[in-house]
Image (tube, rainbow, N blue to C red; front, side):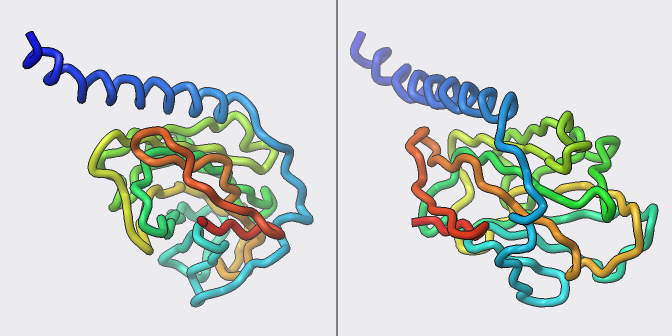
Length: 196
C-alpha cells in the first residue's frame, strides 16, 4: 500500500503544478495592463544589429532589413539566473505601423523556441489591434535553465519597410515561476526586467 502512495505522489505533484500554472495562464490571457507608446521608447539597448535586450528578457531577429509585406520571426530569450523556468507569461508590445502578428503561422502567431521543447506554449491574439501580443508557456519537468534560453518564436508580418534595430517594441514580463509553481522574483525599472 505504501508503494502505491509513493508512486502516485510525483504524478499528483505534477497535476497540482499544471493546475496552478493553468489557472495563472488563464488569468494572464484573460486580462492585462494597457500598453502606452511612451513605455516602448525607454531603455531600448542594442546588443548587435538584430538583437534588442530588455534586462534578462530580450528578443532578436535574423534579418536587419525588413520589407513591407514580408513575414519574419522574432526569437524570445531569457536569462533564468539559475532558476528552472516552469511558467512564463509575456506581452510583446509593438507599433502597428511597423508590424503585426501573423496568426496564420505557428499556433496563433507563436511557436516553441529551441530551448522550450518541454513547454506547452499558447497565445491570445485578441489584443493584436491594440498593439499587444500575449503569450505564455508552462513546463513541468526538464525546463529551461540558463543565461540565453530561446523560449519562444513570434511570427510577424511587416506593414512597412524598416530596420529591425530601429523598431519600437518591448517584451513586458507579467509572470515567471519555476516548475513547482513558485514565483521567480523579478523587478521592472523603466521598462527593463531583471530577474533577482
